[in-house]
Length: 246
Ligand code: ADP
Ligand code: MG
Image (cartoon, rainbow, N blue to C red; front, side, top):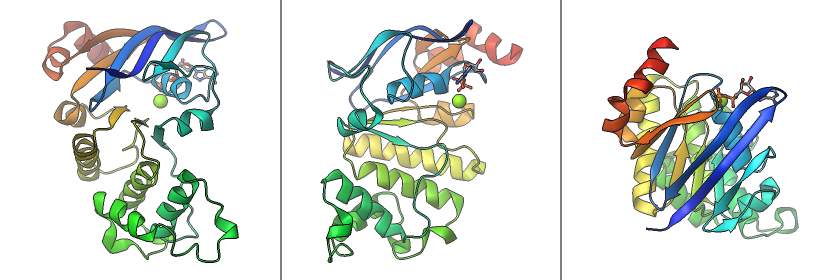
């Protein structure tokens, strides 16, 4: 197996706080990996460094063996690191399908405003992607009227338009009802399985994590304290202590 993502000794301090402290791990193709840990553990700091939005104090991040530390967010995104946003990033004045078309147009480096036939461009592909996330029937609705859970599914379609090798999702189900959380993670698991992408995600609902993750890493005070299968993490006394004591 070859690693899609390799993280070596990644660290980031804020003054005296070591938000991420010497974290190393790798992620294989087709793997759905959960990063869990109490509030303030350093999960978002870790994600922000992987996406190029925050400079590490130390360490290296590699995508398919190529160093990406120090690149700008859009350069990392161009290399195939997709993300869904904790705050919804869709354009609310456009329809559902237009949002996905915009993403496809940008992926193929076309310039939207110069194309008189832009409304037709990539529409078929956009509808396919909407079908993947179960939203084809809502293609022509305006985003402004969508339910929150549907917006989240749309975000996933928008991210998939860029054919990512790796999907980074920091709390994708934040603000969702339990049933919607389970549905979104099930959808993500299906996409990982069917499309061979890899995914790193955070989620605070342990039932959702245990149901879907292939592997789980636990971060506490910036340090990785465990990395293993669902069973290993579930039965790890140190992990139980962090959560029960937390
Ligand atoms: P998590 O996502 O696991 O809840 P964060 O990565 O957001 O944790 O935060 C980890 C630690 O780093 C916390 O102590 C937080 O207060 C601190 N931190 C995060 N971002 C900043 C920042 N921009 N400036 C100062 N401290 C920060
Ligand atoms: Mg966070």
